[in-house]
Length: 297
Image: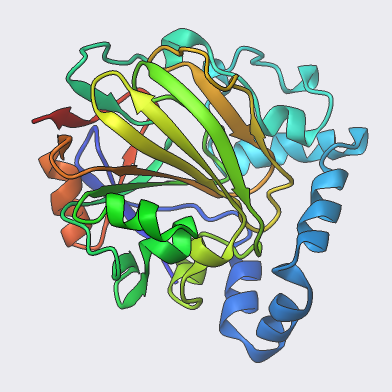
């Protein structure tokens, strides 16, 4: 199955290069694959073992082909030479040069917290959030908190899906104060559209970490990171209760495609029209961390 998205800068429709595409299609589209998925792949043990291998020095050998196959621009990285990385996870969680991700510091602009492909929804129905067309989940299932679900009903949801080729550190979308992250254990299904179309409620089934962020400009925002197949860990690097600046690092994912989801209350902002239009057409919009994705009402 081919996956397409809109490259925001050009406005053109692009075909996504999917790492491990044949494996994903076999796992999610065949009976033997489904069996292996349910018995082993979706469980923590598989992703933990795979993640441990990415920490070993011999995993460095994968970096060159990974960079070439996925057309990763290493001139953006603080360490441009692949020989400088100790193992694959060291490379995967690489830091970028500050100038590689310019951002807006206008207090009325909400920036993307990560590189990725964005879908956005306004006026949420807490009992019927869209995972992909024809597949839904509820806020209460996602938060595992009925009161919190009611609080964000009729609000805004912005989903940023990270592919293996993307920069895998995530950041704060505004100045503010982050509170404690609540960890919810779960499965490790892929968050690729191939899997999202097959497995109901992946975001509610997968491991996730939920942070209440008191934004200076947009009130209380929920920042959630969702794990996926082969994501060894979600690492939080911020300090609870300490003020942060817009664009400051919040954490990073170890190997694997992953997702960052933002929930905002009704009336806090207006999502950019191009992102909303593409979402209605069933297409994600490719953005980089720091790009403006919404503006204050």
